[in-house]
Length: 125
Image (cartoon, rainbow, N blue to C red; front, side, top):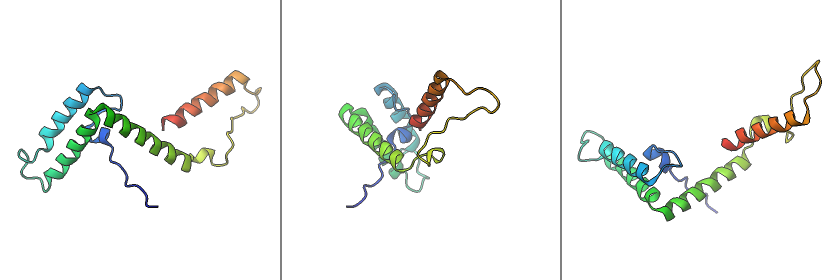
């Protein structure tokens, strides 16, 4: 089985966040089209390649069905990558809670809060 080709980051190409609205995506497309259009920038070695990427990103992100498919594919790729490469600090498989020396051990609520913060950091990337 061949590995799938990595899909480009269309949000990065247009320079918009993942929660961008359709209007924000359209404005970013217009801005990038002016910046990379081959008729405007004749000195670039291959401006049509940049414009192809911008057009593909806009076509995918402007259509709600294609955008949903793209987002779900990117999410599954990120989850698959995250499962295959755990962070170095959790490499032993055990989550270690720091213990303060010379003081009493942290309570249950402190430990749960610490675990929630670590989990949020891990999930956010």
